Length: 384
Image (cartoon, rainbow, N blue to C red; front, side):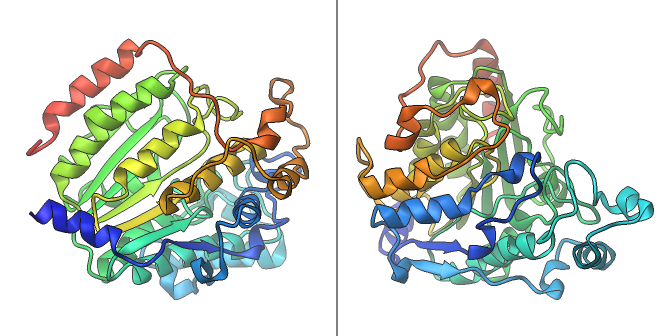
């Protein structure tokens, strides 16, 4: 009966809410950085072009104040980050201590304001979910940020701040699921020893940051599954049904945070994984009704067309919108207007990137590494 009531409470909550902001439009890490491409603004524009984002479901993200960020980040680091934005330069000492002004974490115009806005959205989400519901914040998901330094394109760690906010607002057991191509080292750093935070990550083996070994257990609630290059939809379906869903269900969370990084799809330049966006949407749908509070974040994603299409489809799934076979002219116009300077030759724009949201499914034989990895982790699921 409790499982039924939990599902009903999630279903009968208000309409899903989308947290976004205009700061992401035109903001870039630099002309050659992977995050030079538009992402959140594309999702906002596509969702509106499809009639899926009425004003009643859109919330403009606040910018987190410094004091609100000290739940995870040090005061010295936050001061250095703000000073770097103001001066648009850093000293060698700051670069060495805090990881600012590096090729991965460059100095740019909004280097504090942009991540602080994403963090503000995640902090707000925890408050808005106090009584249950669904919130989507595609600007979130910066899962590499560390307490005293920037790391892996992430200046702040909004998933950590989101989980902390959920806790302050009544959630006692939080399940964090991460399907980005990269391991969420910052989130695991924060919660590896917290038995009330379930951590599940699928990430490409031997891919930066090269953390997240399958043998890592934390306090017993850490499940890392490094996956092989070439991972496809059938692999992910097995992982979803044999590992993610049993582990989350057995944990009995009252909140779920899903980091839905879009860099595990075939068209992304930052991984060797081969998922279609259908695989991500299946995870989004499967987790939606398990707990009364559901927060879906963005994350990686470096091809402007694949990330924009995938994350717009996430919003469709959360709202039970039917994804059309062919996009209307206004939505196609959003996609045709995108630019990706310096794109790899193998990823030149394709026509279906402009006219559809849904990829063709990518099937294949289940990889032995996936089967063996799931088999290694399954016995650790308590109560399954």
